[in-house]
Length: 539
Image 1 (tube, rainbow, N blue to C red):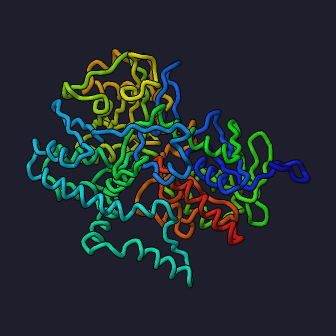
Image 2 (cartoon, rainbow, N blue to C red):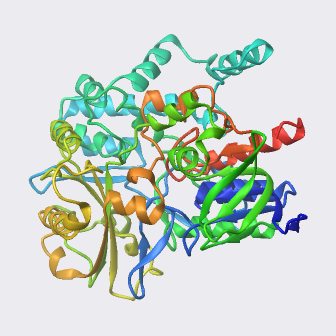
Image 3 (cartoon, rainbow, N blue to C red):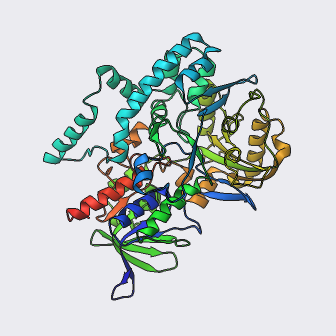
């Protein structure tokens, strides 16, 4: 850090927000020799990838809660294992309640999953093995795009030719049938896809439970099938396709490990440092002003905040083209998700669970509706009402991680899908506890002793996700994951490569390509873009 003539502190780069992508970008920039400052509005780092207490001595992953898509490249480049990051792979990947006290499991071994399915449909067991192979092949084609900028739709001249060549290189090995399948996944609906390939309602529920969580719309809406491909990307230390697992110490261990590497490379991280505005002089970002009035200068600014918070909240409207502001304002947010975190006296009993189930299996239970039920939930939420039957994903990480709470106790974190950000009647502050009671009642149909085991609880409504974690309208992905808001359209056409209309200002969060989830990809890609631009004198 240095100072300028009027006393402002000066850095090479400032990152706004110490979420996992902001920290990832900072670590890469620090590793490249830049003097970097990260400013975080909360008193802890991690953004929505944090481990926090429900009651004293009882910790759990409060928001993001399961590791699946953390990029192996990021794990290796930032040496996260050396920083103490440990992940325990999940097998089964999913256990899904399908009604009547029955549970279907999706195992890491496809043949074992097919055997599981066979009790419901011989035809579907055979179809599963084929579909699993096809989906993994399609996901493998998409994998490289996660760690590089999407095609630039605004490219001209030689740049346009280079972009076309890059696309051709990525897809030249694809067969015509695979191209058709990919288009179907990007534009078609999950419900139609599953109805076409499977006959069993139980198997369809299993696939529904492995779709992208936090996504708008029901399974019969266009674009809802893409989540299946996202969850089959490679993740974890060993780059396993479809990896899913528990992080020892909770999801906050990921951000703590990234921060440790960043600090080793000289990155400074300040908490309790909310940004009031980004300073712009002559069309160029020159620094930030904190809420307490402190000004900090830098040649490059990276925002890990979502696009709406960044461009509509931190920048003078006069500094941006009006059509760009309109495009940002039009990004679909209105997050459909909530969380319930519980501290328990003991492990709850699950109806229908095999007596010999091991700890990894017992740590998971997805309470997923039918395809029709999920569509109905989405439609009800769209009208501003809370559905009576919700999609609830339950994880008891303490069964595989004894660092979270005292011996004999347990922690449960529950993800809830298809709730509205804007309620038709009343407010989330008024309905918070009744909402939590309703979730507990719904889970108790599958875990009858759960209500009596609860020692403490914290519910996070969509409004809480906005107020506490800075997620505009409670959207965990910084903008819905639909075809109109993915790849070269994220956050807007023409500005999908981390740069923005303000020279020297970049997006490095989930609002940029490739989107949400704990991947580290947007942070990695934004830092790479900054370094390329600096090398060319364009940053």
